[in-house]
Length: 336
Image (cartoon, rainbow, N blue to C red; front, side, top):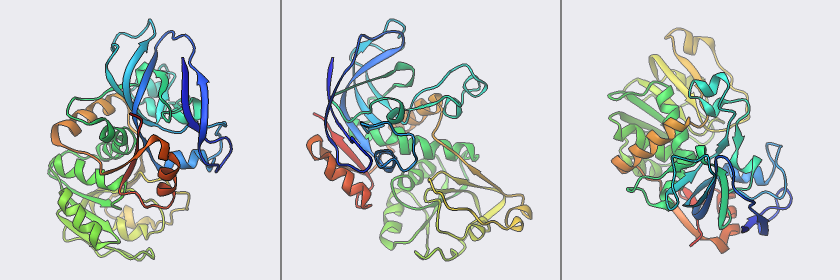
C-alpha cells in the first residue's frame, strides 16, 4: 500500500509531500485510514529536532484517528471498520517490570509514534494494534485526537497525584493541556481554581467549570493565594514561575504535579514542602488502561478540547499557528 503523506526532510523545514510503502501486515500490525490528526507542540519539537533523536524525513502526527482497514493475524481485539486512535506512544516491550505493572508509558523501550515510525500526517498509517484505542461513539473524530495526547497527559497526571472527587484542584495555565485539566477535574466532582495571566482565559475557564481564578503576572511573580488551600496543583506550563509560592498554595499533604515540558532548573526551598509534608512529582502520558478509561469518561461527561481545524493541504499553516501560539487550543488536520 502506498501512503501519501507530508514530511519534514530536515530540521525546521516546511512539510512537503512524501510517499512510502506499507508492506504486508503481520503479527499485531494494524493499518488505519486516517480521518483526522491533531498537531501539538511535541510534533513541532520533533520536526525541529529540539530534543534530538529525530530521523528524517519525519512524518508528524501523534493524535491520529481513523478507520481500521487491515489487521495482522495476531489481532483479536479489533475488527475491520473500527474507529481507533493512536497517541504519543506506539510500542513498548510489554515484558519489563513497568509494563507488567500496567505502566507501559514508562517502559525503557517505549516507542514514540513519530520518532520510531511515520505518524498520522498521511492518508494511512500502520501501528502496533495494542496501542490503537477504540474511540467511543460519543466522541467526534476531530475532537478525539487531542485527547490521545493532551487529554491522557492531564487525566493520568491528576489521577496519579491522587484526584478522587470532592477535592480542591489547582490548574496552572489555560492552554492546550490546561483547558482539558479543568474539565476533567471539574466534571469528576472537584472544585477547580485556575492560575492564568489573562482575565479572558479566566472567564473561559469558568465556562468550563472552574470555580475560582487567580490572575498572575507574566513575569513569573508569585501568585496570590486562592481562597482555599489546594489538595493538588497540576502545572501545565512548567517554567518561569515562583515554585515555592505555588507550593505554599497547597494544603498539608498536597501534591504539585508537573506535566508541562520545560528545561529550566526548578529552585525549591525545602521548607515549602517539608513543613506541610507536601510533595512534588512529574507525570508523563498515561497507560493503555488509563487511555481507555479517559476516553470513556470524556464521552460520558462531554469533555472535549476546543479545536481549530485545518484542511490537510494547509498543514504548514497549522504548524505556523502552533509555533506562534495562536491556536485556541488544539490544532487538528482533517484528511477527508
